[in-house]
Length: 145
Image 1 (cartoon, rainbow, N blue to C red):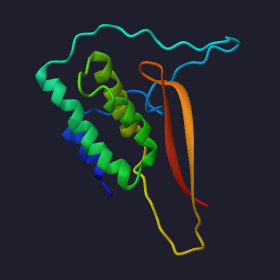
Image 2: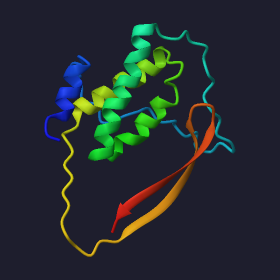
Image 3: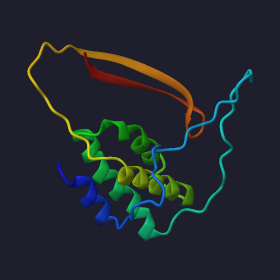
């Protein structure tokens, strides 16, 4: 899939970032020493206009194909943005732009398969306070040993 990232960024007219972006999405900063971790307070932002509203699903679809094929580390960020695609706001657009900056900063991923005595290992991971609305999530992970 050589050139896919550069073509996708050109399609969305996304310029190269001024500073390298090595984090694809913001994380919740832990409050060390607290007995309880609280979710961020949701703000009442206005939804985006119709043109920008259709921009987010196009980006998600384009990069979902790429992440499914070769660059699976972007899936978490796409999942977070996709939870807000029904009613995107300005903060959703900021998350989308940060993701595109990350994609522009990273090198193209390459996956190489060779015959070997591989073992496919599957485990799941649960986390708390990583999604909007203080939801707990559980995701399976597949990796080759």
